[in-house]
Image (tube, rainbow, N blue to C red):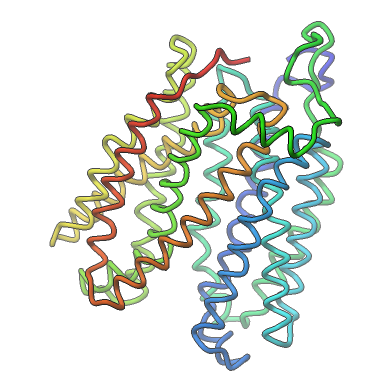
Length: 412
């Protein structure tokens, strides 16, 4: 790190630590509602369809606005986009705990989706600005572990609702997020290219003149980006199939009670994922220093092992083997999450990096929603959910192997 960056050599890791907290809030704020179903349904007299709509509305608004959120981070200050996003979604979280009607809560969930859509592309872009070849995957993976923590602890909402009422959870995390966003104003810094490294054609320089049309044209003219986009869509299908239906699958197949099924569905995969982002990040950083395709190979190897174990989880009659399958699949997920953004940095122009990730989020969310519906339709038709997991595990394996078609460029 040079003096011209006006930061100490420890700042890139301080940045990861600060954004880890934001990543945690990003997921726990969105997932709290899923563990508070009973008191919400009772207070607002909701049907199951109305309760489901609260999550669907968030998902749709989040996915649709993700490319725009990424574009704003590329065109303007990543720091400002992050701070604005955290402030708005935290205020909306606080408001959620104060709502008095279903319609009001529905609007709050839509606004949360819009504001949260701006965060992930901007945060990952800022982290990869500060972290180069030697630390990029590990730094990205550590940040993603904050999302895992938020997802894993989202179930605490049920206990909060039992002890203090469902509103208190939203109010606490919303108020904390507002205060934290104010602190970020003073400690978060945009990365600046050192003067001695600047050149007229350096793609990492800020360019306020880029347009959304120019960004889309540049992204979708790159074949390797299209391959990554298809892979990420399949990954989104797997993730949403797990988020939405794995508790039900485990409950039906292994005769677990609702609490045990819910904790098992998130807990074992998150354990594997936590280990995966650390191990996958370290391995990829070292491999990339010697081989330009090192980060790609880590993802491919991860799912070459993890996808068959997902198949095992859906096929075995023994719960111990299912646990093993979930942990190993989680490990592969961690390998992937630590390296997708770093690989993207090797494929597309640095001026469009956040926009590129925004489109990944957009399409994976849309197809993920379709997968959730398809699995529900299978269940309504009395078809075992195991079939859905078996099919998607095979597709996931093929999608991972397709990444070998990607042609990465030298990292900068």
